[in-house]
Image 1 (cartoon, rainbow, N blue to C red):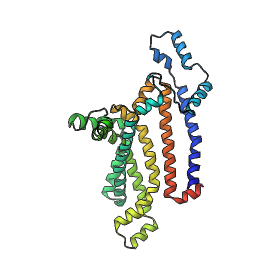
Image 2: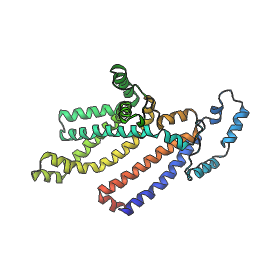
Image 3: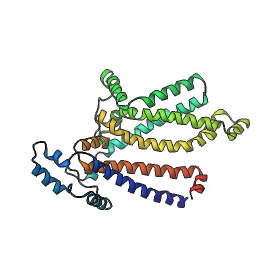
Image 4: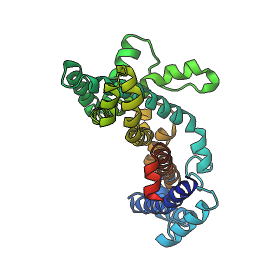
Length: 316
């Protein structure tokens, strides 16, 4: 197992190098001039040229990339052009809402997806199966921003049960924090819950048709024991991959949800940084999100190997 984990960790290194190079190159090729945005529309060409030289934006591509890599390997993501603070500090200051929102959204997705997927599989071909799959298709197809605006209208404007928008930190009390995050978490997690329901149904139908499940039934085990101990346990092995990827997708999707609900998280900071052409901040945030994707995939691979020893032998 130790050898398997080391191999998976080493395989993530070249992926991260490619990701960092792609992030820098794409932002370098993005149109727009940070110096012009900083100085405003009334700035003269001479002042813009002077600022570009001071920021190192006139240097060749490879010089800028090597300088960025040099700082990156020292743990320095650079300084924000507009916030006047290190990029790492700016991201850390806004990490709490994003991490809480993503975790709650994943919880919503699991609470919706796993039970409904199991119910649909057990009632295959019946009305409940058709209803669950129909709702799942609607959930996957529904635009996040449209669902968020409708939830705001119903629960904040009409019923006044929940806050309209914004965020209260954990220092104000966990209950108040959750009140502000309920609607964003449902908005973000519903689509992933629908996707998870479809995947759970598919995996459960596959395992319910296996010989060992039929053997368990023939031995006289009751239905809950067959479903939970034999079918669901084996169906969870491929579902672990889906759940891990769902967390990564939810973290990326938080960018739109935070903007809709005015949550001061990393996603909203990214949109502001793009509008200001704050390249160091955009590079830092995109890099952190990409790093989270790689780390989650790494954890899923390791967990997959723990659940299925045959995979460790195959990849060893």
